Image 1: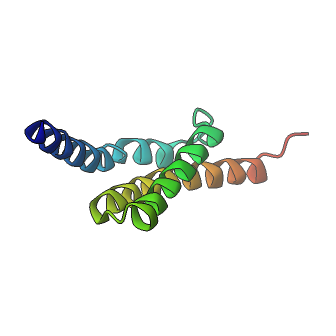
Image 2: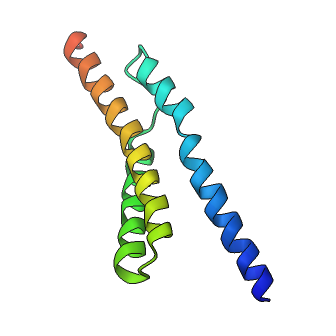
Length: 100
């Protein structure tokens, strides 16, 4: 059983560390979007940002696990970046093209 727990722990660490890298294409796509990032749900990405923030707090303050906390800080920063870029693009689009 200890070997299984160790294996699962390593798989969790590796997949969640690599997951941070997989935000790059989404960040790039949102950054390049010319339509105000209309396809991005600010509600969904905002919730994911909040969930990652609370997971980082949980890791740091409740279970005192530096690795877990670092992974979720990375996820928080990446989801927050997608959310912020999309929100700024949407705001800029509204300011540049106000609806009549």
